[in-house]
Image (cartoon, rainbow, N blue to C red; front, top):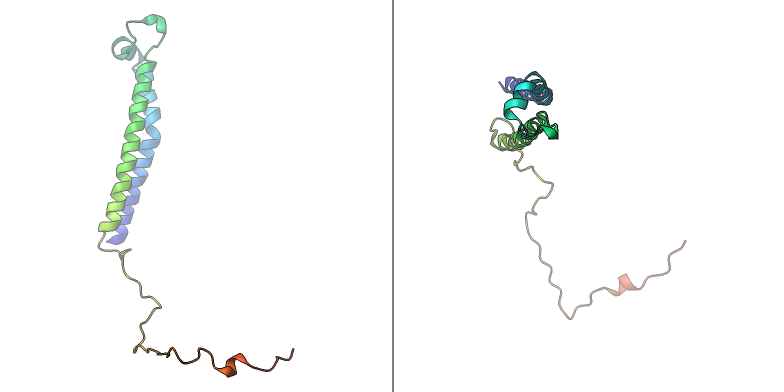
Length: 132
């Protein structure tokens, strides 16, 4: 079951990548096929032929809309993948506690040193020189 989900997701991502790769060429192809109609009816500058826009404003507008749509889709896909990772109950969670090497001692030992007792014994301080 888990493998079929991955295959399905992979196929969907491949399809999205192919569609995204062909969006701009399809917009340009549509512009070339319908250029006369766009120049006469959809061009913003159709009433000012001296600008020689010839529908390029329409093409630029469509390409900008396509870019915005791709950015929104990428953001939605990213958020969806984050939500899917967090909500996926079949896979081992990324928030599972891993055992650590730290263990508590069985008994706590307290040492009491009197303020009157020396910190170091004389044997630790005075010793013969070390031979090299």
